[in-house]
Length: 103
Image 1 (cartoon, one colour):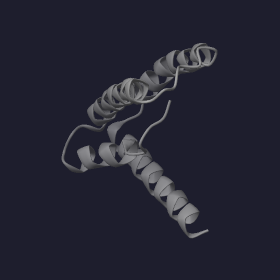
Image 2 (cartoon, one colour; image 1 turned 180 degrees about the horizontal axis):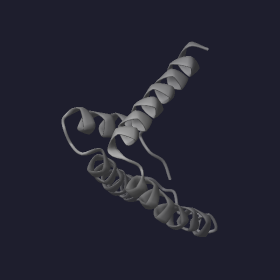
Image 3 (tube, helix red, strand yellow; image 1 turned 60 degrees about the horizontal axis):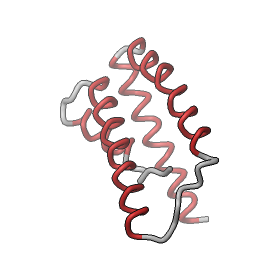
């Protein structure tokens, strides 16, 4: 479905506030999933659109297959390196967004 793009910002904010980087990633992932679920339900209630069920298996399969790899990566990467990766990802995404806005 779609996200609001706030994941890197929320994760970075938690890390800057002193939350362990692995916990920050887990908290953000859970909150993004719940936010998307509420968004989809609200969209379906207040619009006249229906779900295109032929897309659902691909979306679900992609989500399910990504979970073990993400969990394994977060488990194996050290906190210092994880902070660096989150910081770089936040910076790159911000620059891309700024570039799209300007150009």
